[in-house]
Image (cartoon, rainbow, N blue to C red):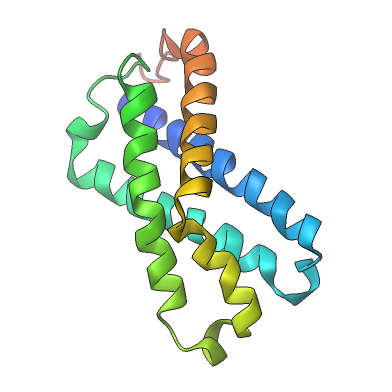
Length: 144
């Protein structure tokens, strides 16, 4: 696997974790963890992560270098956060009886609001910026 794909995989995991972590805290704080709140609030960023990886596969120049460098710390969170409302609409457009009770689907609709998206973007950009010095030199491949 090339260094670009390692970087894409690592960035996708960071983007997912920076979105799903705070959202899980909100589910826990509201007491909806017993009613499937985690599944929907994590399902939306997970779906966005899969779409993001597909986009990187189809458009390799989305991550043009094997190193994490500016402006990737901003463009990758922008792309990922733009995918979140799309994934949210996919989750909420199915029949409520197939997914979960209506009260729980509200957690998927959270990703259609600007505040969680902005918070997620800021957190993602900050974490990617903090990880940049660790990822300046890509790991050596096993084959050379």
